Length: 249
Image (cartoon, rainbow, N blue to C red):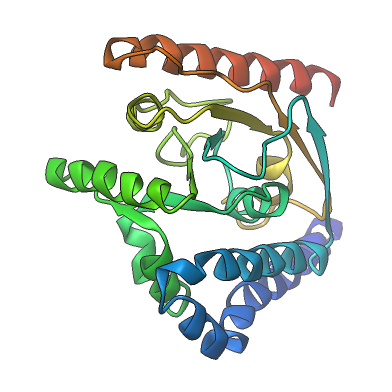
């Protein structure tokens, strides 16, 4: 009986989360239409996106605590990467990163009502089954970088179906982009998103979301032949950190 009432509360809490998640997009739709109509207004859109993310997290009971080993400069572009286990990852990335960045994400999310409309207007979409689509991503990323923006990719590609998996193998795309466009890599560990809000519906609870920003990984003087090495380096850094955190949490 106790578990039944817990599941009822989780159901109501998750409904409230999605109401806020989508409802705020509805509420600000006219403003979002305006600020996404011109590329040079993207920084304004980014500020609104950060407000949306922080508000959604706050009013659904989440608090963010960030441990920064190194800070980004206001000027310059970066490649932000992190582990991916939950819908919270997108909100958390927006909450902790101040530098305007563009997500590289799967094309399927563009089909989500309302949210997908603005997602398609502001993100770089990739169809993982289409090699030509991946080539377009590199060209579009270069264009956004030339506008002074950073890039964010979750290099696992997809959220693992098996929630016992700490970290899935990284794809090469983020690291190839970083090397080709000389973007410092900013590896980040998102410790609590899976525990707090996994894709198992009747699970999770409000609470603290801890984030660690690791020392940046330089790609200066690296070439495409270094992609696998730098990918493995970042994978081991985040995987070992997540394992260490799981032992003390």
